[in-house]
Image (cartoon, rainbow, N blue to C red):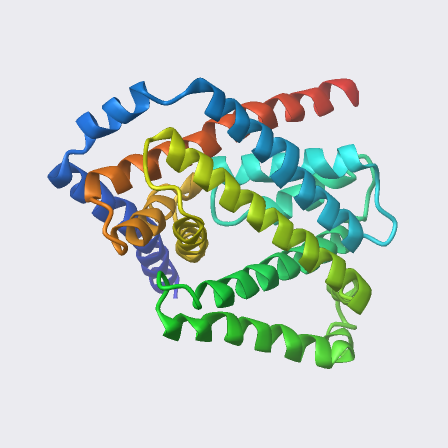
Amino acid sequence: MLNKIKQNKKLFRLLRYIIPIILVVWMIIINPWQDFADRLANVPFYLILIGVAINFGLIFSLKAWRWRIAIPKPPSFFKIYASQLEGQLANILIGMGVADFVRSSRLRKDEEGTFPEDFGTAVADRACEYLSLSILFALSVLTPFVPWYLIFAPLVYMGILGLALAKPKFLQDKTKKWPKANRLVKAIHESLTTKRMFYMVLISFLGWLSEVLLIVIMLKALGLSTGIGLAVLILVAINVAIAIPGPPANLGTFETGAIIAMTSVGIDNEAALSFALFYHGFHVITTSLVASLVWFGRNIFSR
């Protein structure tokens, strides 16, 4: 039994790193570094500043606002915003989708016993985020960039969410023996009222549009095509790719999604790889710096 568990762990680790390994081998073959260096040397600094403003002023603020709606008795907006950043920092350092666990535990770090409810609202928040992405995904199928058969992915997701909402008491009855799990399930269903879902999906949609704007600016910074259709395709492809379990900071899977999207519309390999590295680096570096400052600040001043 132990040998099987060890073998499964080895297989899981291999699956986590297989895409980054393939990407590294491909990078060695392509050798994009001269193209990347040339493009990076000509990046206008003001576009980076605009990107930072959009990321922290719009995208993270909208995420915090959306989660605040999901919480029946929310703490201050600053605490929600800060815990969002800390969760993202943990995801960069550890990977494996730990952001929701960490942001839920950090939200009311001075209060005991609130994690089940906070994690339940985080799950509801995430459900609305991906429901809005599914709608954006469906709309993108109407463009010439996305194959029509990919419409089935958001339809399946929306169907599963619809079934979960159709029988809200089913999971509550099944988890009565486990009080914390029961509290978590109740929090999910309390968050997913029709009114709250409407506003959360609407805010999520604004958040995704903000990310589309950020991608357009990052494309412009590297001197690449800045079409809205291309930006939507890149956004959808990245989010599909990072759903695959990977190493910390989604290294490899993030780049793979962006590269597949860009090369599918005729952009050359070197330019696609340059953008993927630049855009991912922008996210990792800026978020790590700001989130680290927030984490240290909250720990120092809360003493």
